[in-house]
Image (tube, rainbow, N blue to C red; front, side, top):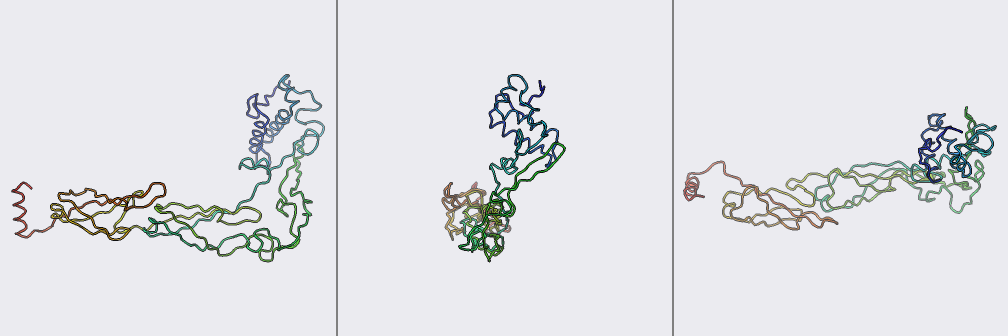
Length: 350
């Protein structure tokens, strides 16, 4: 009896599927791999468990008897030592396959360029209505001559002499556990297996070129101060990979009179005491120009007058309103005549 619980070692239940076994081993191998600074003994134990549970015959023997009856030690630890090559019982690791699983991909991982972040300042009106803003950014972009291929036009392709057209390089490293064979992308052809016979003269075969580029940023109506707009694929380009993203942070200049509250606009309207008592009509400045506001008689200070549809447009919320808050300004000084009139109003119970 081996005395080892291989399911527990791989953090699995006994009825785990082959796919679950593979996923769990990849995750733990990434964590404990000696080349990544992990625990060699733990990694050896994981590999032993995986070599048993990934083999249908050995797994059936283990599930029934608690051990296997094949030649040599479990997991291929026989005369040949602990191996990850093509030998019998060994396991070959494609690091791109194992570590690619953590980014949702399989096989060769695609390289990605760096992201770029820029700041722009908008007027209150631009932020309210939306605007197209053109930016000139000097960055690494795709070569327009070769469209990123790095090849001269109409050239032929030849087999990469470093990887012999496989696109992969096999490296073997020796350790106290045996030989570890890893697979990585060929750095000469960048995993393609072939290369252009003649390279692009514009970018010298890299497929990318640093140059100023004009980018139009569509600012949506109603954007808030401090919001970020992401333009996917407009960041730094990279050879044989995908470009990063461009992040545009928006700063909005405050308005002298208006304040934004979601899709609504708010402002204060100062009126005289007599206007509040008798009612009046005032002209205000809105984002759409001058507007006439009727102040009803008997209005109170702090009361809100709502002007429907005079706020900010939103594609999913419709159009907001303009909220006008009444502020009654009381006179600091009164003439004798004005004072007597107010005393008369006081006597009338006003």
